[in-house]
Image (cartoon, rainbow, N blue to C red; front, side, top):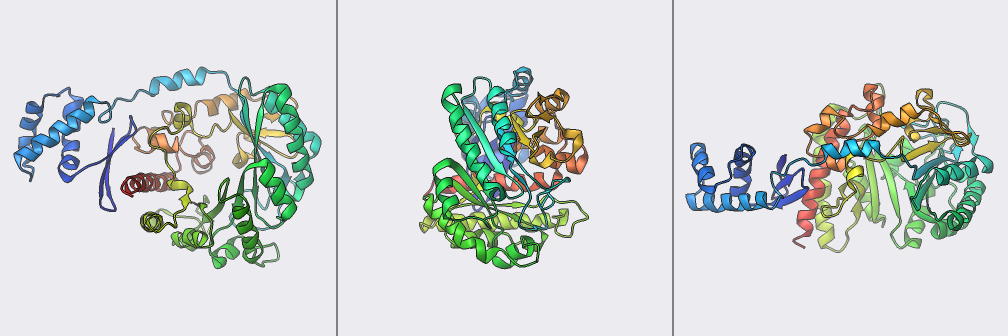
Length: 460
């Protein structure tokens, strides 16, 4: 499978199955889609291909066409063009593997001190009651993780909410407990924290710098955008309170091991301005992602917004190249792509591992496939004391991959997005093996921009 596109002056060719990316001239770019069906029929001789191309009346000299044909056939012979799909058989073996749990999202607090308008957690309540996780439940969750992690050494725990700093003492005690489990069980915990910043202080920052491998700081961008969508419950904005704290966190961590994470909505379709605003504040690790909301929400992104959003991603990518040349570069999460090593095969095919390797834990110890399913009793899998009781749910998620989704099979971005978010698919289509169409369109654009940036970086 081949995907070709033009971006920022580059002719880019992606061989989907091998992952190879080629920046080519106009002749090669125009010949590849003509030669691909010939190659599929087994035609490999340059003379036969040149003869077949004569009917296309190409506007190039015969000598240039001949050279381009030779170049294309060399790439095909090396396996970096017209490569076969070798992964579909692998996924069946993968589904037979023993399930191990490697990561937990601990809902340390089903409560929040903000009232974000797009919050899928309903201001921290998750379709239920406000609650803080007790130390005992948290310990049982870590014990469950260790017991179900098999031979895996590195384990991940994200302190999530609501707002986890509303239960800070338990966070600290659980980190200490996790550290006490490492040596006896030959495990290594990687703790992360997601916070809105309201309760951030020096003591929290010092502890996080010491113990948290990553910290996610929630901010939507410009003051007027952030305060519109992320106010306190009384309606007042939170931007001025959190920005100085977030800048201090970023500097204390050497501009690494954190990212500021925002959400853009229909209220700021010009979201590239928010990304650049965050960069101008000094942040170097940035993620601003599209809201996922139903059509009844006035802030939801609609299909008619897609052309504007595609242009925004192009504008952002071009500005990032400019700033990189000026020595003011920054990372944008959705444009970060590894064209050489990349994720393992299983991750490329199945994604985040929700419902199998990754589970969410409520304050009272219930297990769900991920934080976005919490509160939906149809997806209640078990609890930290008894383990996974609904193995049918686990098996359904184990079978969720790019080959289980018809929309993914012919999509060039499938090995980068891994089929997209199961929760979004379920919320919009009632089936985790579907795909959220608006999200897919934006993902394809982000992949194109990310690859173009790699091409530009190669010239710097």
